[in-house]
Length: 484
Image (tube, rainbow, N blue to C red; front, side, top):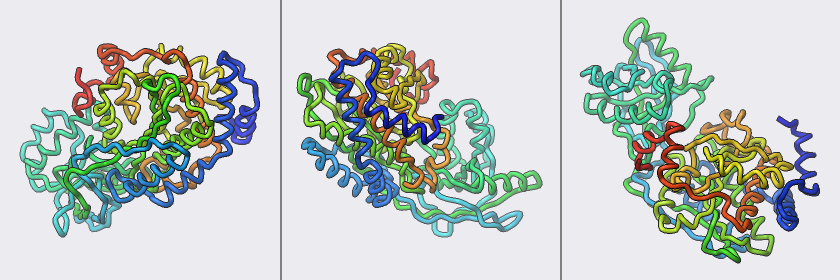
């Protein structure tokens, strides 16, 4: 990694340096204007408002809805008139309440415990029972347990379960919840893997279904104690969860649009998920990505000239529950997906910039080279990676065959705050946030201005081959977001 002070000199010099690759002079001039606007712009103030004033933004929660109104007002304040909410439905709304629990045998000791997302409440007084550890969720093994779950709390040893690949294990694990309920289990327990009893917020299922049993997570050191005690005999626990749940709920994606001057019917979309978990204030995940989208919109609007192609700016809901908002958008706009030239997504925090992931497309990597070498390298964003991921909102567009770019940053410190109480504004490096936002804005402008499409739309068979190679196909089939 470039030392921070040297990075600052390099980044600032990029604003006045003569770009050395192929892009035409007017494109380089506009790229410098965009970068300068973002480096001198209010991105950190925008992020501070979002993270401090609204906090954790669970999809469909009052905090999310207030923040969505604020974001729409931000877009309009930049002079963008076409700003709208595009609703989609989630199966259930959910807001965290109180949680508590303790070991009850062979000794009494409080547990570091919280509810998993989209867990129902326990009955008053909680659930209690002997712990049944499950480290194999294959159908044959689960069936072999017979009536052992009766009256017990099932604890998943997720380290062992996911050891041979999460894309296969996750659907198998989800299928066990109803089985264990039918077998008489009283609750589900998931150990965390972070030192010092730190908990990572997550839900036990893909989607926004309520779990069929009360589901809690417990700190790593508590879990290890339970495992040691179990070597000597039965271990029993009790926990109580009180959450607020609802039935189907409408959640709004926030979309703003700058109409293109020459090809208004062709569009690119720049997106980031707006929702977050609620332990911290959603600063890195994904306040930084949301701030980059807002800053890109502000800087492009401030140019005073529209791009040749239409640019849409999207802040997605429902990402943390299974990439729901962006998937719903691709389904609602299926008839015009042929006109979508590219999607740019940012949801990896604001680490030191690297460039873009091209999601397994050598043709897109080749097409991006002039932009990366000529416009992004001096912003420390000239790298390209063919890594294929389906962990955020570029994914549904990738399934449509659309050229998908996911912002690539250094993630070596991202895990320190991801889904944790420590995901707060003070963890964000201002210089890196501005550099990342500049890369997004410059890339978007270059693709929107190019007389040719950055890369073709892939057919279904080619997308299927990419997914199969990345071992993602069966997972996406199981969650209903892909049909072979």
